[in-house]
Length: 255
Image (cartoon, rainbow, N blue to C red; front, top):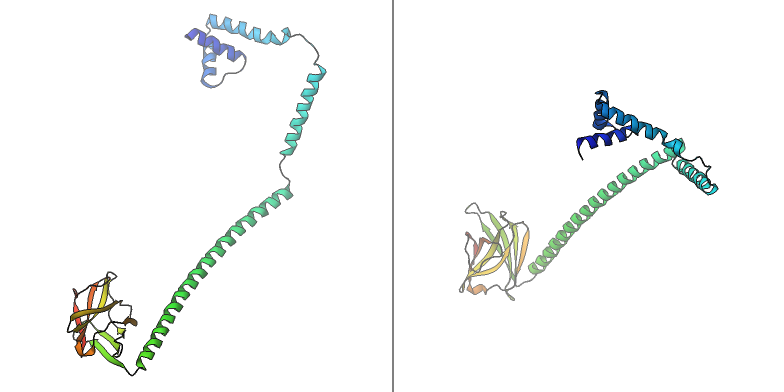
């Protein structure tokens, strides 16, 4: 499309009142310039569009078309009535609904948080009760050991250096079962553990590992014979224990 055709098309739309913005300003500038061709073209187009309504034959509407138009008007009225603004009472109810919904959400959050705290408290109490029950059972088992005439008690300790160790070894000389009760011992890093050893005729033998949480107790079912035992040691080993002492070793008692 060349420039002339473009301007003619804009004049056609201008005559119908369909232009706006830059295109509207463009046509008005051309007409104000006094260009004879475009002024004449505009007059012809405008005259043609103005006379179009008079060229249509004046006939009354058919009954069917008239009824369809009236039905359409009634339908629009019903739709407009349906979307009328709510009255004050409706707005009041809507406002209370929003407030009630917000309160319900806050209540739900509060109940959830309370339930979470109660659950954590219950779990904590369950752990404490389990620990207390274990300690009671351990103390009860230790008392049974002490009441046994075949049990010999060895006080184990090391006060010669910074490693302050206090423990008791309850040794059933008849069955060679024993209980090592830890009274006081320094805490270790998580990747380390304590390991209890007996030095006998067979050399250093592991009797088991234990943590450094204090007030601990381990059961030993394989103590060597008393006549073959020379001394007791505690060493610091990697978590899980070792077949032979590899870390720092402390002598805590002897026969």
